[in-house]
Image (cartoon, rainbow, N blue to C red; front, side, top):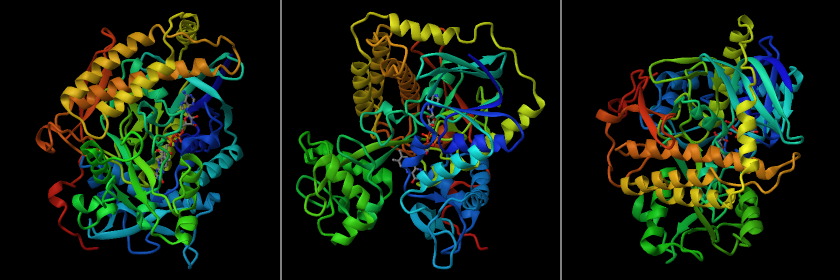
Length: 583
Ligand SMILES: Cc1cc2nc3c(=O)[nH]c(=O)nc-3n(C[C@H](O)[C@H](O)[C@H](O)COP(=O)(O)OP(=O)(O)OC[C@H]3O[C@@H](n4cnc5c(N)ncnc54)[C@H](O)[C@@H]3O)c2cc1C
């Protein structure tokens, strides 16, 4: 079946919905194609908040926010993106308020703001209240608000449609091919402009806070075309996920007085961060926990977890401010935080890298400024490089609205003056071949087994601590898994609601993301931000202040070609850090 829209948006999380809304406001026809019903997207799981320098509680300025973002990104952040972001997010939050988002309030009626790790006043002098929130349901409220606004502005939704191919002819994007889960039919969406907003790929790891559906689909599809993925080696782990499950345990649990303990019930953070202890930054806490586990002081049946102790806290705190996590611990682990210590593990949380774009959301085809006409990207799956080597909490929700909006505006502007590009004679041919291949394979390997090995080995070899030999080993493991994948069989051959088939296709996407990530990580011989190497322990600005661009070698499957892109600088360097500027 064929459809025609001026702009097609892939994904209906915060980034996709913001992009679709702004495209729709730009007087063009818009379709949003999403494998999930929009309000079920992972954005809905975000609790903490969205950072903007409104200054409702204490003095704040966009320039301080810009600086914190760059410093948090360990100077790999593109500073033009950080500037646009820190300025635009202020208006964007007010705009969300005007759209009806029910933010929590200060006593004077302004949007409530709270502190969050890494957000400071006067370039690092003290913590500042910058995170705007709607109780602990900020992401949920963003999704609901933006979905309503899209319905009002005439966006057409195609839900439970899985995009499996991107149509690019002569350097121009002309549409996408999607698989309708309900019928098993393929649909071609012919478009003047396409915006990709398909979210992250945390499912490449065994323990992750990410939903099951976050399998890096569009990153992989982009990469399969011989186009680059940027900074894939940078992946953030959150220190506290529920043991074995990875479900996020908010940072607030330590803010409220929760204490991390090892098997001897020792408060070990006193050794790693004597001053701020359990409230040290995410990466330091996660690394300290892994060190304890590696040195044999882990807890739980496999000795691979750490305790979080709330037993000394009053009942009102545990069942009030920490109600949600208390509920999760009771339901999923059978533990009652009022009297039991809860088992947690670092959990894979956020991809800093992805599809490279410029600050208007247009996709880049190389590290030298090459672009793809009519193709845009935003959100976690994109890399405008706002977050550099590590993301600050609350900056992802901000990224979605700021760069989702910019991508929507750019795509509509392009579509208003462009014609529909030429489609190939049979645009669905490749997707049909992919699906038929999986359906007709009679190999005995099944996708679940391959996925299990992939997730376990990625966790061990390309996780929180990394070193050359383990990552080299992982390169070989991924090659073997890709060989096995060529023969996987899908037992279910039915046309309707074929979840087995979807799982198998998504595994292919995960394998590509893992390949690009591992190759980029082996190549970067320094430690920076979330990329912590045991064999290259220091940051090396002389050689590595540059973005990685990983390309699939189309002539030699399994081989990855690495290129680079300069970091956009705008005056902030490490030397600036200690100095305060007066306003
Ligand atoms: C538990 C948790 C808590 C978080 N808390 C915070 C927080 O407090 N503050 C903050 O700033 N950040 C937070 N983050 C990070 C932030 O929520 C995410 O980075 C962000 O929501 C991603 O938004 P997105 O629009 O890019 O993608 P998502 O919201 O993940 O949406 C992806 C969309 O793409 C669609 N899609 C994917 N593949 C396909 C395909 N092949 N075809 C069609 N559609 C497809 C899906 O249907 C979905 O609609 C949190 C993340 C998690 C996991």
